[in-house]
Image (cartoon, rainbow, N blue to C red):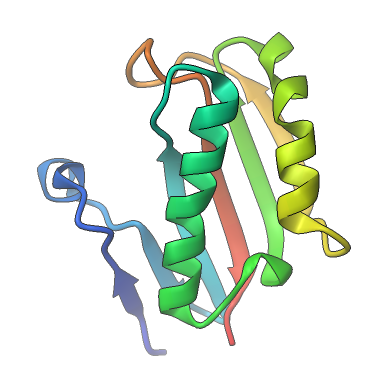
Length: 119
């Protein structure tokens, strides 16, 4: 089985020992991704941008997504992201789960982990 590792250039990839995505077994596994900005909506958009870049490098798009998990420290903020997510996935929404939990830093309002079919 061929494995392709995709790096985003984040300094944390080397510090922690992970990569943004791994293409293996017919899937693109995108690591949990946080975004930048002050609001959950801004962070959701920028996290999705980072994920889109990893998917492009793997030859996939959001239309290939089969599973997504959202992690938020405050579940009440998730509804603010719904229009962004609906626009992102359009007519090909993946199976999804939302989990309320602490994130690595209190400044983060959302973390998104995604699995897509590999081309």
